[in-house]
Image (cartoon, rainbow, N blue to C red; front, top):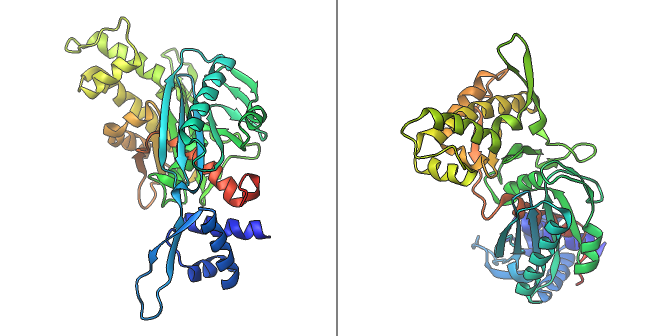
Length: 388
């Protein structure tokens, strides 16, 4: 019971920073004496701190309490087909150290080896200065209940498990979740959707996926596989009287962007781009410089984006979409076109319209979601790793 009550105090201060002991008692339902004992214990162990007095209302002013950012830390790791990212965060979710390592292979031992090297680097940076609550891992693909990567198309992984091995090696709890779901959690805790009870985070890169938040809860489905929206099917005419089936991610992803851009490059005498040796980085540079060929390609993609988002709104009645990912973050100048196409396919336009946003979480929404996941777990079940 003591651990549950301690968790209530920590969770309350995370949700509502700067509470007095009296307000903590009201918020948690615990007695004043219980709150006093718990807060004294947490202050002694550097988990919370006194930060001044509340504004005077005529009586005795209460002392305000907050989480101590340096009272604990979390390591977050994210990997996909192009890079491994690692961060060390404090109890406030602030990033104290970050590193990105590009990769040229998705071979299992190679990727996990780089992950372990980066985790070791984060441990060295922390240097025992504060307790580590755990490691949060963000992985592409379908993640099972015990943290195994059941299937990842773009990593070409099946039934890859590393959670138990890492827990033994690093002596802290490890959580493994789908990176897009974690990105939604990051946006909900620290980003553009912190005030939204219903929203979808849409990640667009070499694939497309969604993190779905309903009533402030991450929706993952019965088996944890929800959000694979990139596999929604659409019919595409081929000029022969028959229709081909395409999935949505093949209509909006990086390979499609490059394919469409190459077509525009060949027909645009003004472009500085050469279709020979074209790559994604070069296309982005030209896009940011105002080259018309990649802009025309993004314009086409934005219409495909709108079609898919319309299907998602019609199915879920969620009017807020946050776009992120290697390509998703580039749709900012094209949101008007995406919204126009989206509204053409809606059953009904909601009263406030559709709200499209571009993620601005740095260094990465999924990394911050992995941080939030560890904190969520520990603050609900502090006995997992928090010895006070």
